[in-house]
Length: 444
Image (tube, rainbow, N blue to C red; front, top):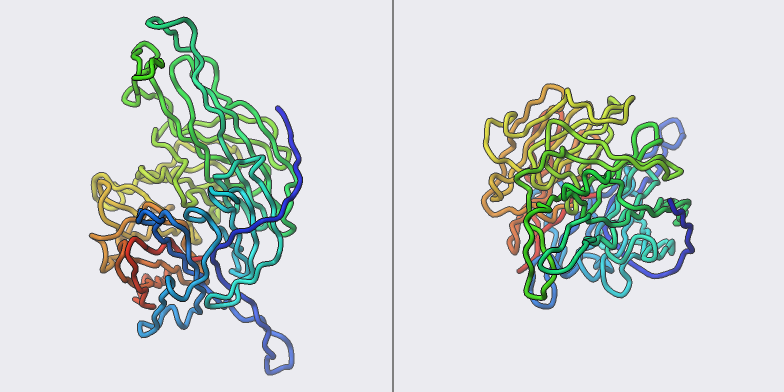
C-alpha cells in the first residue's frame, strides 16, 4: 500500500453553518457562555442551462428565535452568501455551529478546501485556511466530517475492466479501481496522512463480476481507531458478453443475482493501513449515499448506518467488534407499516433517537422520528409532502432539544420546520422564499 503526504495550496470555496459563542456576565460577575447563536440554511440554484440544483449553493444564518418565528422570512437567493463551487457544494460544519467547512466540487478549483466562521445572515468570515486536495482525492471528492475536527476525503479512481482474448470471444477477468483516502485536520487545514491502494475485493469475488464504482460517507468509530466507508457495489454476469457500438466488450448487469451483502470498507486510523471489507447478512442495499451523511456513532458507541439513498434499512456496526452486528436490523417499512420506503437522508440525534427523511417508491418527501432501540417510527406530517424531493439533501442541524428541517418543493416557497425531538412538538417557523429551479438542501 502506497502512502502519500502532500502539500497545501491556496484557493477557495464556501458553504453555510451556524453559530458563534458569546460570553455574557452572570449576576455573580462570572462569564456564562450562551447557547448556539446561529443555524445556517443552505439552498441550491440551477446551472446556466436551468438544470435544477446544479449551479451552486447559497447560505444564510439565522438565530433560533428567527427559526421559530412564522412571521420571519428568508430570501436566501437574493440575500444569501454564494458558496464558491462550480456545482452544488458539499458542506460540513463543527458541532457547535461556529465553523463551516467545504471542499469545492468540480470546476477549475474542484478539490479545494476552505474554512469559514459563521457570523450571522450572509456574513461568513474566510479564515484563509485553504488546502488543495485535488491531487489526492480528485476534483469531485467525496468527504465528510468523520469526527469533530477530523475530515476524511475518499475517492475511487481508475476503475477499469481487464479482459483476455479478442472479439467475439473476450474473457472477463475483473473490474477494479484504486481507493484514495486523505485525513484532513479541520482545525489547522493540513493533511496528516493519505494513502492509495487497490480496492480489496478477493480475486474470487472479482471473477464473479463484483466491483465497486464509488465510495463515500466515511466515519470514525468512537475509539477513533477505524474508518468505515460506504461502498457502491455492482455485479455483472461474466458469461453474458455483448459488444457496444464502438466494438468494446460489455457484460450484462447481474444485480438480480447479487448475493453479497451491504459492504463497508474499513481501514485503521490514523495509519490508514490494513484495508478490509465487512458485509451485512441482513441487507444487500448499497450504503454509499449521495450527498448526505448516512453513518453516525450512537450514544451506545455503535455505528448506525443507513442504506441510503435507495434503501429502507438502518444497520449497526458493533462498538467492540468493528464488524456488522447482524442481530440488529431497523426496517423503515416495518416501523411505519408501509411498503417501498426509501431513506433519502437522516440524522442520529441522541439516546437512540433519529430523524429520517424518506420517499415512498421514489415519490414525495416525508419525515419520521425513529427510535433505533425500540425499532419504531412515528411519521411527522408536513405541508409539502407531495412536492418534496430530498435527493440532494445534505444535513440536519441539531441544537439542544431541536432539529431544524427546511422544507421547500423545487422552485416553490416553504418553511423551516423546527422539531422538538423529545416532545415531538412541531413548529412551522421561518418562511423560506422560493426561486425557479432551486430548493433548500439542509441546515447546519
